[in-house]
Amino acid sequence: MAERHRFENVDLSCLTSSTFSITSLTLYVIMIIVTIFGNILIIVSIYKYPKQFKGSLYMLIGNLAAADLLLGIWLLVFLLETMIPDIKENWHYCIVKPIGIIIPYGCSIMCLLGISFDRFMAVLFPLKHLLKTNRRKLFIVYLGGMWLIAILAGGLPIILQNLKPPNTTFLCYIGTNLPQEFELIPPILIFVTGIIDFILYGAVIWKIKTNKIPGNSVTRKKNTKTILMIIVLVLFVICWMPFIICSLMTQADISISTLQNIICAKEYLAKLGLSNSAMNWVLYGLANKKFRIAFRTLLCYSGCCTSTQQALPSTRSVVNKHNENFDGLAETEVANKRTGQ
Image (cartoon, rainbow, N blue to C red; front, side, top):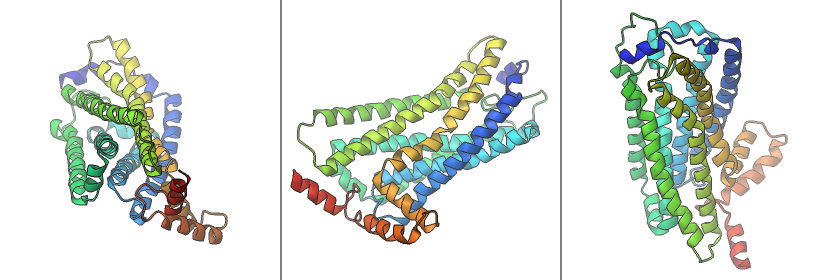
């Protein structure tokens, strides 16, 4: 492909230096541990306590955690690449490498879009949202279609590429061996879905601020969840947007010196984007009371508590109080707050 030859004379010694290798190795180890550990906790919590984590929002959060977990596992390949640089001389490895990024990346975008629509319905049309929440088959079809689209999109690099190694030298970095039109798909996708997300959340925020009727504890809890999901979306955009901008800049007609600086910056900024998978579960996990209780219970089962015998009974009793309340408040707490009002 013609655009591949643009990178042949680029000096990328910045990406072979010891500083870059040590930085990459350190960040990959931290991200792998945090991402895999945290997102496994999220998925196991939702699976093990379905009564506490029922509803469309938690189904979407569970799939977002699965996408982040998949990315965390794929980072093991990047860690291997850092430890064994010669693997980047394998052409087939280089064209397969982006798949592990594109699939969870696409799933995350569609999950965030689904979450924004879910919050839109929950705040503006609560009765319809309550009815839709019980239609599990509808969400299963949506989530299945989401993963199917992401897998097909992830396979495009191989489908569009010639599997035979090129006769000239090549660079084993994301974007340097892909068709130019394919390189434009991620920024366009995030731009379009981002606009839709912010329009939906804008309507939600307007509804919350203009609602003059004092909300009960359930309504306040629903609004808190919505604000938390907005923060998750904003964090995703902040982490990935610099990488997307650099990707677009590499497609422009620029000098060789500028191009090599952008590619070097792009590889560092990719670490920022990948770190988003390690941050998500902290936001919607530790900030959610039900998740904190589930984490404590699971870790106590694993023997991580200092006093397991004392921790388990109290934790179980608190978890059981959430069975009948969709938004995670114990029935006794709701009754007390309503009485106080």
